[in-house]
Amino acid sequence: MTLKHFNKDFSAGLSVFLVTLPLCLGIALASGAPLFSGLLAGIVGGIVVTLFSGSEVSVSGPAAGLTIIVLDSIEVLGSFSHFLTAVVLAGAFQYVLGWLKAGRLSSFVPSSVINGMLVAIGIVIILKQIPHALGWDADVEGEFDFLQLNHHNTFSEILEALSHPHPGAIAISITCLAVMITWEYFSKKDFRFFKVFPIGLLVVLTGVLMNQVFKLWIPGFYLEESTHLVKVPLILSLEDASSAFHFPVWEALANPKVYLAAFTLMLVASIESLLSLEVADKLDPQRRVSSPSQELKAQGIGNMVSGLIGGLPLTLVTLRTSVNIYSGSKTRLSAFIQGVLMLIAVITIPQLLNFIPLACLASLLLLIGYKLATSQKLPEINRKSLPQFLPFSVTIAGIIFSDLLLGIVLGLLAGIISIIVTNNRSAISMARDQQNILVLFIKDVTFMNKPYLKSLLDSFEKGDSVYIDGTRAEFIDHDIFQLLESFKKDALYRGIQVEFKGISPHKYSFKNAIISKTPFS
Image (tube, rainbow, N blue to C red; front, top):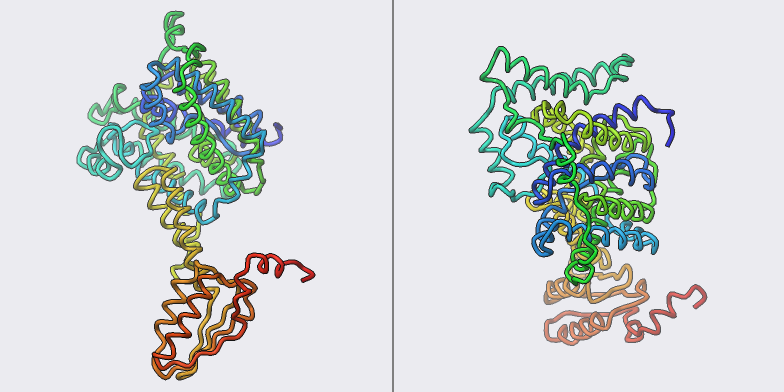
């Protein structure tokens, strides 16, 4: 870490801290875990993981994608302390994965899926923050799945919010958005004060000040502490401190279910971290490339530490990383500052943090969501761009209407299908001049090309003269050869003349396929 860009890193770290605080609490609540465990995970993600990570801009902490796993694991294992044992084991497994260089597997994820993930997360952030901006805070912060814990979904929650608007929240949200847009405008005009003063702090101060003014002079606009403000658990005595901390129970290692929970946590957390790392590198203005295997080691260390002190499992998180980058972060110092600020604030000023309206934080996230959603160019809709457009759009729809990991899996499947369809057509070309037809095998032809070739052969009519040239193909699948032989026999009865060139049985020989590809054959 370096202090060269301290002003920008401090400003970014402060913005991330203000956004991370309610998210950590909301994820803990959604996970059925103690609220303090979410804060501990956020602190560990900022301080510990940052020290070992290979990324300069990423931020780690408790993730929404693990909430269901955490909730189910606590129920299956019987207690949160038993679950913490699984978190420590998951961290150890992750570290071993990093040591085995398993991070390189992330390179197999197509860029179209990563781009779709960026746009989808931006859209989801906007959709999830609209209710908070309107003053409808029934759903916890940090829950990003389409189907919510309160039995609503993303869109029904927005409709509910529109039918129960809170004038104070709307006033705070609109004012904070106007302040940020104005601030960015003057910042781009090279006014030094607007570049140095942390925009996140200004948004929070604006929200707190407005709400206190409402309390004194416009009671109908006032946002009550019980529902509309940040709720940090207070530690005012030794008894509070002892009840806030939980620790692993090592006797749980005798329970096979602990290992299953640990493996599940390791797998999902690793996938989410590696994908988020790809996003971080893509958003990084300096285009620095991070080591995915080193990131797995860092996440493993972080999870072991978090589990040992009673924190939730953590991953590298796209939302907080995006806030960090768009807030002007230059180095990993910003993520470290975020963790330190959270530690100091939770210990010293939890009462002051509880004055922050969720509406002002929603305005901050709305702007970040907009930047993310518009950060990628939409691929053109045509046959040539099918391998890019299909996984891009499927990933977006999957994440919006389900959750992050399922959306990515659907995007990957769509990518595989589009590649098959594209290769199916690109290996074979056809040209027609009246009744003279040329079918050309441009490259190796396999059984994957059989449906397309069959449809071509079936389309020929009586009187056609078909010339099939396979000289460019070094390998022709046995199924393809049989299809051509069958077509040649049937052509006699269909009134079609057929001539082959470069089509022979030896081309589907496995041995020949290998030999033909050696450079000196």
